[in-house]
Amino acid sequence: MVGESSSGMKYRKIPQETIIRLAYYLRALNFFHQEGIKITSSRRLAEILRINPHQVRKDLSFFGQFGKKGVGYNVDTLRDSLREILGLKHRWYACIVGFGNLAKAISLYRGFYEQGIIIKVGFDIVKRKVNKKYGNVYVYHIDEMPRVVKREKISLGIITTPQNVAQEIGEKLVKCGVLGILNFSPIRLKLPPDIVLKDVELAAQLFYLTYHLKRKRKGGK
Amino acid sequence: MVGESSSGMKYRKIPQETIIRLAYYLRALNFFHQEGIKITSSRRLAEILRINPHQVRKDLSFFGQFGKKGVGYNVDTLRDSLREILGLKHRWYACIVGFGNLAKAISLYRGFYEQGIIIKVGFDIVKRKVNKKYGNVYVYHIDEMPRVVKREKISLGIITTPQNVAQEIGEKLVKCGVLGILNFSPIRLKLPPDIVLKDVELAAQLFYLTYHLKRKRKGGK
DNA sequence: AATTGTGAACCTCTTCACAGCT
DNA sequence: AGCTGTGAAGAGGTTCACAATT
Image 1 (cartoon, protein in one colour):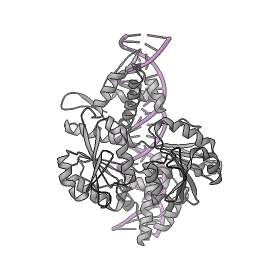
Image 2 (cartoon, each protein chain N blue to C red; image 1 turned 135 degrees about the vertical axis):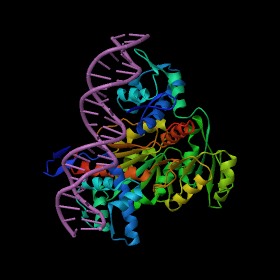
Image 3 (cartoon, chains in turn orange, red, cyan, purple; image 1 turned 60 degrees about the horizontal axis):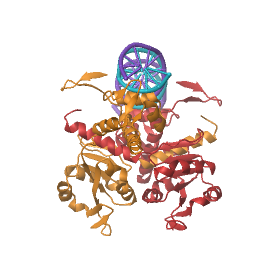
Image 4 (cartoon, rainbow over the protein chains, first blue to last red; image 1 turned 45 degrees about the horizontal axis):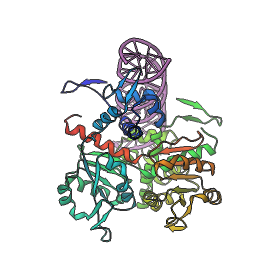
């Protein structure tokens, strides 16, 4: 399906998975850049993701023509283009609500900072956890959310609370002006449609394994 | 596509996402069970997952006929069937390699234990972390993996190491006899095809948010 | 010779429509 | 009247084939 946007540029419907793969391509390109590799190809990127090269070219073709036929892709310019496409050319400020082990793991992950996603603050209700700095993340009491989110110009929220409060926290984040939410609690949130929301279910992934293993045992395919 | 398996039972190709949704349905049914609710419907399950009821019925229809027309589904029997389908009727023993914050978060999650996935042990190389018990998980030095995995009858491995050692650890787990691997490191593993493998990329999910938010700002859809 | 970019074919998954049962 | 189960239609996503370029 091809259409015409108001700016006159042609656009297509972009598969969700394409966006996720772009993030993988970017990671690979960052690595190539570090290693001093100047040129790469769809074949090479495909190997890293264990997909086929057509997929790589198709994904990129949704956004433009980045390669040279017969040659490949310039690592630095493609890297730059992907950062632009993924909205990583300027900084994003994020907060994490529910400051347990998962929150700690996420806030210590360097890949976000390097790409311009700065996890600035955390929120919790447990006294023992609040008013402390964890790595670069200062943890506030949840009642301070409206004030802190505004002051720190936070536009992304990450929910790592228990499920029974996740919906409430989601609504609170929206009220505070957050635009996008990544939800690690195992319930699916109901939020206004203009909020960009992504649910990530860790537990269901393990059940995916047991499903397939059980079938292997029984000799099914 | 419909075919005929060796046992004569008809089978179909099951969408990957169907399996993940079954895990969600099961969670909802567990909740209904706790609440004493006896009967439910595709409409109700669909509401919880924010999908459409046809999807629920289609997903279930891959595995049999569990409902009564005009009535709905019996909570307890459907719950039991899903546990059977997902291979949760007997216990699975799992280990986690790389015992950082993410590993702690996963090993403290009660949803696994309740469904029969027992995270028994962890492995690490850092002296400070090994030979300690964390919750119900005893952490061993990684050199003990062959011995411990065999002794504890572990068939699932969860990788939460840094990416530079993830491939090596994957191979080690396979050598120790593990059958399924859940990989949280941001590289895609290359392992024998008979190993059930699932990569879960936490970082890419955040970039999914920035991609969409950037487009909103620009006024695109 | 090697590699990109892309319409078309193909495959997979979701949604629809409705027959059939309670 | 209300709800399931499912073939068929529709939408979405991947793979193919090959023209175009260096």
